[in-house]
Image (cartoon, rainbow, N blue to C red; front, side):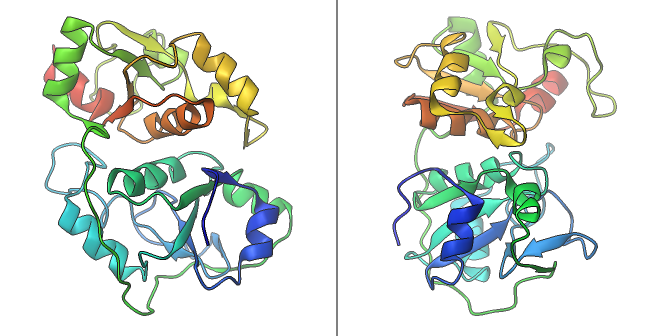
Length: 268
């Protein structure tokens, strides 16, 4: 099965849930599956924090190696022929990070469930208690794609030389230093020469806005031909902007992996 859109509806997933190629991933940020939180039937828990991050890094949710990503994807029973649909418990949040990781490792047959678990529950589609995957090992090959992720020195150069349009997905309050950062001990601030587009501007009533509305949001901060780096707090919601950019037709985009947590810690 080939997914021809980066986003699918809950109706579409329900209709295709029994397709042998479909793999549903629960991209909720959690240490382990929450037994009190239901999963979509047959979903597999994608552990962003532990299995699919470089846990030796000083900063959270750091980009994993090609070897780590490949091994952990295989452990979830993912195959090169799989069609992956990702969701999270908030609607449109951490699922975008999962979507972006797969693309960064050369796998494009992946889409986000629009509205995530809340929309699925609202539609009263089948659920089951959350659990860890214990099925067959998959046959999956990861191939790291250059340019998808940017790191501290890349962003420092881009900021100083204004070679990229740096777009921050945090709330306006955080970007403008009007409210403190939620991470304890992290200073407020912004990357020099960056602009703000809160990821929530792309969402309405828990669902992604229309393609036309998303284009209008991006038009406020960038042109389609711009080279863009998306940033946020820790590299999660920057991927929501990357998703929106793909929908809006922006091609030359990347994500700052460490985002403000790293920049605010390393730069006075």
